[in-house]
Length: 419
Image (cartoon, rainbow, N blue to C red; front, top):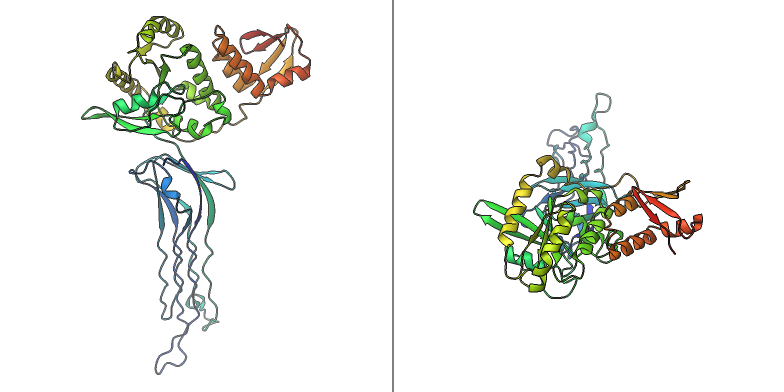
């Protein structure tokens, strides 16, 4: 079972107590203090284990306690330190403080570790308190209390290429055709509800890690449907294969919807290189659509490829094209994409100003949505109207007194208001 988010409790080890003890030997009835220090409590670390690709091993254990330090002893014996606790996680795991939502660490590299709870210091024994004025101190320290944290672990798959598209576009079939992954495949939407990873081997020295991301639906950026639970996985990828369903009534509208959802969730996603591919080209009706779709997308700056994930026609060429695009992604951009993206301001916020020309609406999300809407397609226009409602702009305009026929200005676009 794929699990990509979990809540756990961690606690470091308590430091061992220092002791009060005096040297007692034959013929030395009044020996000096020799109470030893307590041992250090164990630390709690997270460590990347390459063989893991899910957080499912946390289903049966949610509490992790490091070993306490041992009590000190006489004859200046220091107590045994508690063993450090290493919690193994897959690469791509982000560790948050569940109480404050603070990002503690982002684990992406093999063997990488982060300290989350530091073990308590061992208490000092009375031998450490002896002075020239107090040669027989009856004082020692108990061990330092442990640190404890409630943590939230989130897994973002680390893949070279993310496969996106509407439900039933054939993403899982494509992944199964080019890798050894065995995703669930069926002819109905939302077959994939968990991300799947696969490795495609182009030649003995070249591989690509691909992630089949569950199909997007309208409103996913707001958490509707599968929502944020899978959108965050796309943030880790460097290149996107945008798979169009050849049997869709309007693949161009689907293309616009997916890109809008990606950009509304995280503007960085809109900057990722995309390879647009029409799937199911083995069907005659899809093959007939290809020339028109190719021209329509090329006019918008997106060359269109064609494949059949079922018959594997064009699949090999697509992989090599993906590798070529991936190689052109600057290394510094790949590294910058690894941490979580958290907007400085609320991207959903907007402002409405009445001008002499009309109603000016400004806001990060709505302006981005307007720029990515294909106004020549009625479904895209209806979807944009839905976005106005979801963001609360529709109600805000009505309350502000907008009237039938008023001009609405969003970025460089001029729209006419109609009830």
